[in-house]
Amino acid sequence: MAGAFALGFKQCRKIGGSQIRSLLRAKDVFLFDCDGVLWNGEAAVTGAPKVLRTLLKHGKHVFFVTNNCTKLRENYAKKFSRLGFTGVRPEQIFSSSYCSALYLRDVARVQGQVFVIGGEGVRNELRQAGIPVVGDEDEAPDATIFHCGLASDVRAVLVGHDDKFTFLKLAKASCYLRNPECLFLATDADPWHPLPGERILPGSGCLSAALEVASGRKAMVIGKPSPFMFECISSQFSVDPAQCLMVGDRLETDMLFGSNCGLDTMLTLTGISHMKTAQEYKDCDHPANHSFVPDYVVDTIADFLPAFEED
Amino acid sequence: MAGAFALGFKQCRKIGGSQIRSLLRAKDVFLFDCDGVLWNGEAAVTGAPKVLRTLLKHGKHVFFVTNNCTKLRENYAKKFSRLGFTGVRPEQIFSSSYCSALYLRDVARVQGQVFVIGGEGVRNELRQAGIPVVGDEDEAPDATIFHCGLASDVRAVLVGHDDKFTFLKLAKASCYLRNPECLFLATDADPWHPLPGERILPGSGCLSAALEVASGRKAMVIGKPSPFMFECISSQFSVDPAQCLMVGDRLETDMLFGSNCGLDTMLTLTGISHMKTAQEYKDCDHPANHSFVPDYVVDTIADFLPAFEED
Image 1 (cartoon, rainbow over the protein chains, first blue to last red):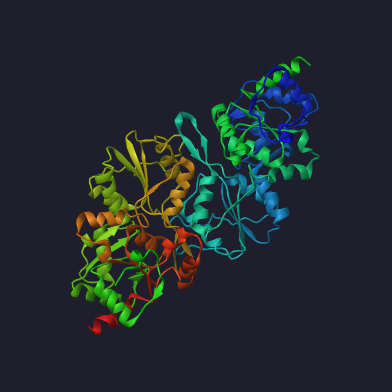
Image 2: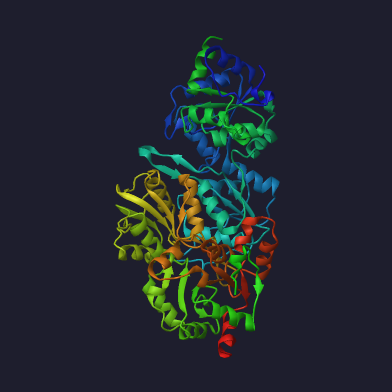
């Protein structure tokens, strides 16, 4: 089966039955986004745990690439287990916080402290990698940017999801970034995430956008759609892009990530993006939009199951 | 004296002595930005109070156009008085919060509540205009976007400077903006403001950028460089753009505002922008940058004083 990448354009083909079977046979490595693909919040997508079990039983390699930076890999593995996905090891999970720690330690080789906008998940992932993180525990509740303390050895600012984001954190980060040698990283650039009841949760991309305006600089994004997470996988496991299928629910992150890494891509319709939007990107004259188009589309990854049963 | 606007391009001319005298004679209306022009923080620019007194003595009309949204006009007038600028009336002060209230009341004629990201200055300016503002006084300290209350009749979100900005405010505003009929306004788009000790204060532009990402919408900006503040002045006073001089310290807001309103512009070098940057904009091939170029440049508005003395 020739990958659509080899043909140079994405076909946005809704597939089922024998087409899924051929695709599953042709690919050895499956990269899954998590939320919207395997589960929604705390509810597993029906059949998804069985899909994972079956892929592993058939000797497939499975990795999880998630822009969620709020959990340590170990805690992410516990979520898999809690929702019925058995046998997932932390080593298979490439979160944007883990990959940020790898970037800071192994690529940037940062010397000094990192100022983190983000929760305990991302801070702990950095600490586990041996990277010192500026503490904010001793900040007085009425501290302001006029009088607060600023560490003198901050060499990077990392912005991730932070539901305790404040003006003071933004102001401190802005001050640190006045030093042009201070790196500016974002775990991801996700704009928002759906919540029950028509609400939305602002994503890390909002917070990094605020800091980009204050600093006049652009954040380097670690998570999808940047290819760095795939480089992290490649550096630890032997993976051939031609043998990989990237499965996700968001065109602007997951499908673009796949395109950026030269992977075949599959959109599953259990999450954020709709078939209609994918078609609109496909039909759009602007070539940049074609990178959002998936090669394949399924209603749910549970559509994989009949393909295995007929083996 | 032909205004540079009439000539179709800005000359960025450093002027003094007789050139200033001619300019002051030619203009009847002086629009001043405040911070960086009349004062820096709590210190008046040397000679600036006398400049204002002298302009008024010579029958000139003076207005103040400021993107600072943190004070009621009355309180702004008190700051003038405290720093030695005598005789300034609230009616001469066009702040971004006052003009936001005018827009909501007289242009948008908003029916319903306004959700404000901003301090008491902007909230009170809205209340004085009779616009109901969503209260946040009763919010529990551990409230989250998952469970907090959301008002059902919010018809506009207004973003201004807010040193008590939190993730929850951002999230609430994002939810309100899911309603396409809910207006999205920003008092201004200033990226940052200088603080003593090489620190910076993030501006309203950071907060509106965060909300733009979360909502996928663009804020309508009320303050400079949008021409709306000049429309507010024109609606209350008889002003001929050809008779106006806009004096400011920031190329990207003050000079662009003047250009957008068809006013002659003067950069004073007591604030943020430098002569070098103005020259770079002038020499730049990109026509859009020419709107940042001032017609005239002075070191300080105190350079006006000799012109009057020689009258």
